[in-house]
Amino acid sequence: MARRSPSTPAKGSAKTTKNAAKTSTDGQKKPGRFKQIIEVFKYTQEMDRSTLPMMLLAMAASIAVGLLVTWLVFNSPWYGVFMGLMVGLLIAMLILARKAERAAFARIKGQPGAALAAMQSIRRGWNVEDEPVQIDPRSQKMLFRASGRSGVAIVAEDSSAISMRLLEKERRAIRRVLQHDSVPVHQIVVGDGDGEVPLHKLPSYMQRMKKPLTKSEGAAVSQRLNVLHRSLRQSMPKGIDPMRARLNRKAMRGR
Image (cartoon, rainbow, N blue to C red; front, side, top):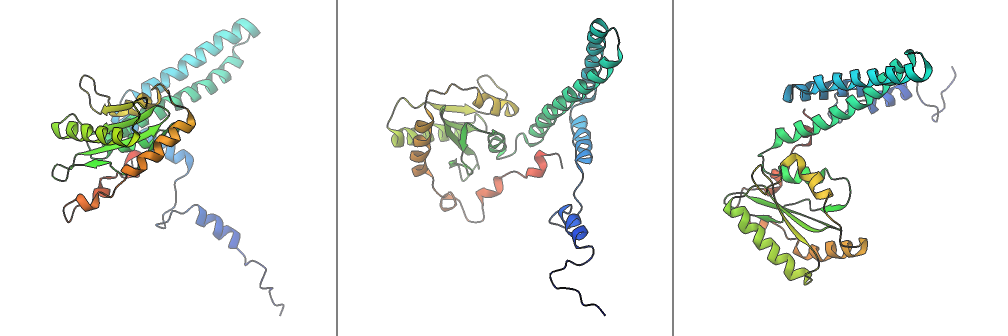
């Protein structure tokens, strides 16, 4: 009987590895890309009924424009059908992505740490602290901070008196460490009132801020702010873990 070499892979090992790659850490099979899009669409449509009509309208308008252009240029409408369909699908996916993001923010709105989740969705330009920089042990009001070329942004999740007191306390601490008035310190309050920034608009609001600092100056500001980084566990009553305020990422995806 022929002996199999130890270096020769067993039959089906490649298939087993491939199947394992499609399986999540808890042993459940990961959904495919198309299935994920369907799940996102169902969740978004449930939260915002205008999603499907806007997607259909975008596709119909793209096809109509494509038909008109190809009829005038090539004297044949068939090219326009395919061109319009492709462009329409792209626009529909962009609409779905924007609506899904807004629906996810609407779902976590009002929860502790929602502002931090919104800030962490900013792809670049800001160095966002992973933990609250100020927290009130009794009310559990939290303050979050980010730094970059636009200066320093301190974000409160509401306009209560406690949050305003935390904002002022953090602003004074930042000024003490920076000792430089040319670094802007932005105080942002998340909410729907006058002078407040809605949760779903917080990332774009911060990205649109002017950038008076250079890249090296922004990095220097972030380094100086590291001195203010302190453990909140020492100031918390026993049995309370401020890290539990972090949001479940699956909730952001509608799962």
